[in-house]
Image 1: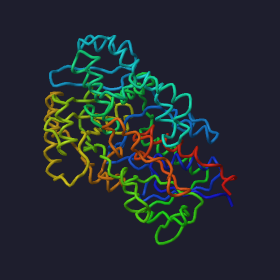
Image 2 (image 1 turned 90 degrees about the horizontal axis):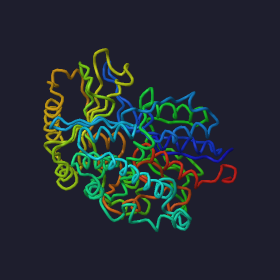
Image 3 (image 1 turned 180 degrees about the horizontal axis):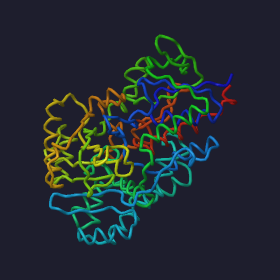
Image 4 (image 1 turned 60 degrees about the horizontal axis):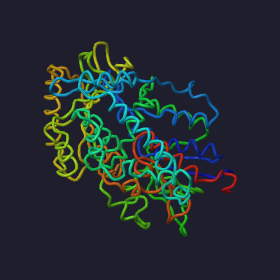
Length: 493
């Protein structure tokens, strides 16, 4: 019998881990508490409207394609996507609008024409982003920060000499204010802090690495919707012999003599040669690892922001809207103070509207749109969410009405809400935080759990709550980093 690996959770990192371990010859079984795979990367069907439930931005598609290549398959036969001409539409209360074109020359011209910002500054910002990516991605995205070899290799030595240029000692907002003359451009580039649930006024300027992914490499859209990332990889894993067990919450990761020996599910022991935890790290230690030594310093780190999402079926087509749309707050700093310092929701929140029916018309009936309408909110600390949600809904609709010159309420045909309490319930994300620990200090990258246990042999970790972080690309990379630590099944026996 081949060596056996069990995976706790079928989030996108758990599915990717199952593929990588199956390719190494392991017999792999995945145990999932929900009735479906994908975790946050799932879908919702409301009457004739379909919504991608969670992550809506797709970058670094090669991380998905690599999994098909690993299995000896042509990715194009199983998973199709297209590059976006416009990464996002931006709207402000004073009527200013900007399309973030994927063509850099066109984007620079757009910014000059509409905001009076020098196109040279845009090019400089994206060169800066590429520079940070080139020097830090090999260390922080593709390697384990918890292995000595990462810090003694030539890539690390090269980066040590450039720490000042990499933004370690500044904040994202300060770096953007020093570069741009237009407050609106500062706001636009500050927005990238929200991609990992952080505050641009606190997070280090190294997070200016993110625009490189969206502009220099590109933003993409899976032709069947974001949920197709989950479905295509789920089917790939099954074709490789991976067994999935749904409605099967893991009760405990079993440990004997400092070594993981399997899991307990439905009061039954499932033996395994190694265990991979894809469950949120904090909740895993509180529940299925509660008998083990607790990494208190990591567990006590501040958590990222959460989200309040309204899934709205809209009985109208708004031609001025695209796949990704942002309606900015008038006072961005005050909005983040509410999220991270006051634990509340600002009365004028920035509104993100994702509309997949623009690219995938069958996601909504003819003449209609499916609006994934989201604002960033604090994680759950016991606030009066019912009141916060009711107030926020009014603020969001009023803002949309002002900027789009419409009367939205009568156009809402169906509605479902996802908020911090239900995010935690559905995905086991501690406090409903979307990205695990926040990145609001320069040491945050080092305060994520490693992709392996230093206390328990043969116990590994993947997913958005551990290194290298949250979001689809980093979750997929967590599975890669983890799997590279594991020998082939033959050598494991």
